[in-house]
Image 1 (tube, rainbow, N blue to C red):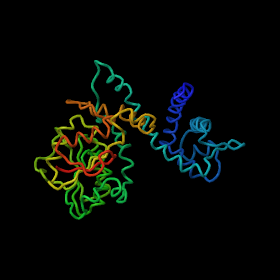
Image 2: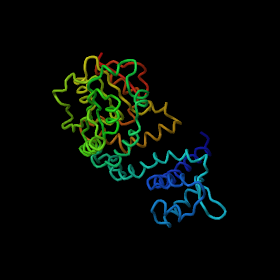
Image 3: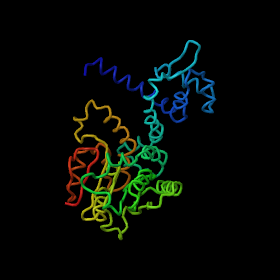
Image 4: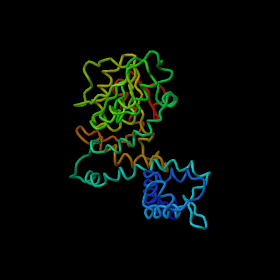
Length: 338
């Protein structure tokens, strides 16, 4: 990269970080959604009224969005998003995680220090876990078949028991229960707040074939040995502080012909192969604030995080006597007992 290009990219990235925080506010308060619903330009007062907000704050937000080029202004000071641009504001939802993870900044800075704590877990991060869980509400049968189910390795009618390991607040677990109405789905997590939220969702949606269980001492129920036909680990494996123990326990409760489906972010273990990849850079930010501290939150503090990468993940799985089915360098990896 040329010197001028480097300087411009560095400066614009810092500037865009500030603007992204304002985008997060617009998403959280429904300002983008409201602007998209209007069919003609509106005043700051009209927008504020539609969202039940103070006009002065809304006007300041519009000042930022218009200066950044994301909201247009008419000659008579009315605001609008051009019709063709409206669909492209959907990524504002991703920006909404920024204030949540930024709340951990003080704790994270201490973790960086030689004499500081190794990490922190998700016990005080329910809002972040709910944000992570949000998109899973739209994981319908089509998504499950295309992005998670071991197609070609397992038939739906052969599945009677499913374990969603690291279920969080449970949206995906409930979707799995809807996808497999003749199977019993178990969602497990070590986070008590997440399990309580999951149980609330189950009651609200009246899903009968799902059960949520709090895992204490990291150990799955002894009576579950060789119980499960299919086990899912979605954005979980790289977060674990003791993955050796967890994968051994997963192997114990997996049937001899069972399949495990693990989803982790697509990041190379070799940093050189991530150079210039903005998506990978973003994932490393999430990992620095969330995944790595979780993986170092208690002994043996595996210190994996997203930076562990696809290649290290594959070697880890194979080292535990498990056989990878298909491409081992995808975000989704399927494996079974060797």
